[in-house]
Each structure stands twice: as structure tokens, then as C-alpha cells.
Image (cartoon, rainbow, N blue to C red):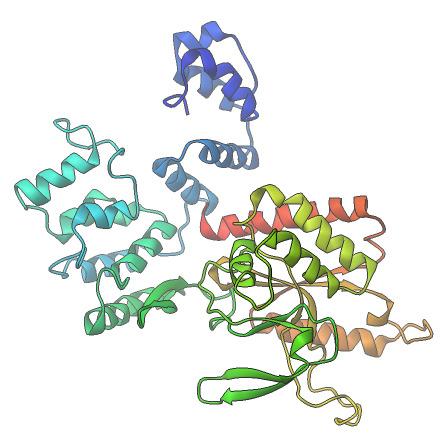
Length: 435
């Protein structure tokens, strides 16, 4: 931080980051010592939050890597044995960056034009790359991996590096698929795999998927915001699993774009919304917000929805979209046609968040109907059915969070609960991604 701030601004900068203030004269004597003296006494959580605050103001590849390693307590998921196996595989590649030049390739992963060089004769890593790839061409794959500290990097950096190695802009065809297979033989031992998460011009894009995190498969045909009768669905192309709504389509919205592993943000939803028929481009955010809110029935649901978007309006459009009334299960038959028997406990969920790394978060706002009969009598059978449905969802990789309607007693109370929950959820998201 001290490298980015002048001595006369350091006192206020430290205060703005939550560090204690001090005397400007001390900052003039040594900026590094001034900052270091304010770090003593901070606990682990405070140091993590400080690092994130600093990264929010000044991007630093080195600090981000330090934070990633710190978050996993310096116990990476990828063991030294697996890293060595990956290294042994990669040094056999005759051209590590594939179709890209090395500066462009590494520039996708780190700020090569501002990182300092390890060779005293150069100022930046970019100059070092130019010397060894353009002037002399004397770096092979092993020297490149050593220079970027492949063996000592965070798990997240290695995952990003491997994903870039097999990106369509770098390599495709059998060269891509063969490398994916080779890397996966090593990765699977530590519970990670490169899997297809997107495509570009028909060529697969791969990303790391870890067990116990997220739901396998790519979301498609998100049917949500239902405000009327159940839609009737057919498979227009059964082999491609293409869904078509043949009746009651006017009561639901259908997000039919493929979603990448980065999840679904409010910006993504708005971009899709503006392409829908009869949607005006004037204030589309407001129009979509109102349309989604129309699908909510109970007051606690409406308060929850409004609180989420009001709390995080400054972070839109990059913030995850809170999607209401989503069909996660679907049975074409009605309860009457099934003679009262349910093949799915619940077909439509109150809210869904699609986060990075294929995390799917289901949010349920529970009223009395979840645990009691219509006359108000407690129903162990209804409760058992509800928790069975949650259990089945969790086994498929979904995260299920329930809120009692009695918790959400007013807009103010709901806002506090939503803030506490979302902050904790995104804290976990940051821990998973190392950011």
C-alpha cells in the first residue's frame, strides 16, 4: 500500500482502510514502518479484511496471491506430488503458450508490465520476457514455469494457468483434448478436474471443478418469476433437451442462454431482458425489478427481495442476481393426476442464486404451510417431507438456506438479516475462489 500513497496522504489512507491513525511526521520518516506498526495486533479475520480493502483500491498480483495462500492456511489442495506431476507434464510441451506469444499469454494471468524483474538489469517482468523470448529465445517450458513460481503458487493461480493452457485461443482440437486428459490424470488425485464450462465458436472452454462445490452440468432453460398457472412443457428436441412451453408461457420468464462458470449476474439478466419482445429499453433495470417482484406472493418474500437489491444496488450489475420463483423440479402431471402422490417434494423454489464455480444457492422463506396443516395443527409429516426435499437437493450439490417467516417481521428487520446472510455467503465465495 505504501508504494501507492504519498507520505502526506498515508495517515488518511490508513484511516480509510480501518487502520489506526498516527502522526504525519512518522509517515515521512518511513512509510513502510508506519504501516507495519499499525498491523501489529490485528487478528486473522482483520488481516483478511484489510487485504481485501487494499485490493479494492489498489490491484496487486502479489498481495492477491498472498491472500489466497493465507486463506487456505498455507495448506493447498494440490499437493506437492500433484504439482510435480503437472510440472513434469507441462515441461514436455514444445510451446507452452500455444498460439500466443509468452507476454500475451502471461499477461492474461498477471500484470507483466508492472511486476518487477528478478534480473537487476531490467525493471519489469515484461522486459525480462522480451529479453528471453525475442532477443535470445532461450527460455524453454521448464524455465518459464520456474520463473512464475509454478510449484509455489496458490491453487487458484494454478487453476487459472491450466484453464488458460487449454483455452481455445491457445490450443484446440486434439492438442487441446489430449492435454486436458493428461492434466486430469494428475488433478483427479487431489479431487479436481478440468471440465467443459463454456464454448467459443464450437470449441470447448475448460475450467476447474472441485468435488463438494457446486452442481455438475451447465444451467440451461432457467424458468422463473412464475405469476400464474403452471406452464406446460414439451421437449422440442429430445436429443438436445430443448424445452418448449406450449401453454401458460405468458406467466413465466425463460432465460435460455448458456451460463458460464461465473454464474448469473444482474447485468447478465438485464442484457437478456432487453432482448425480449415488448420490453422497452427505457429504465430496463426498474422494469425487470417490478416484473420479478410481481411473482412474489407473501410479504416476507417481497421484503427479502427488495432488501437484497437495495442493499447491493451500488454493486450492480456485477452482483449475483437473486432470481425468484424458479422451477428446479418439474412434473408435467398435476397432483390430481398423480392421485395426491408427489414425485417431487417441491417443484418451485422461492429464490435462486447462481454463483461462480457452479454454486447454486436455494433460498426458501417458510410460512406456516411448511410445517402445519391448513387448520394450524403441527404436521410432522409435512416437516419430514420438507427436510427430505432439502436433503435430496444437497446431495445433488445445491446449498439450501431457509428463513422463517417470523424472522422477517418488517423491512428493517429483513434488511439486517439479508445483509448478515449475504455477507457471510460471499465471504464463503471469496474463500473458495481465493479473492
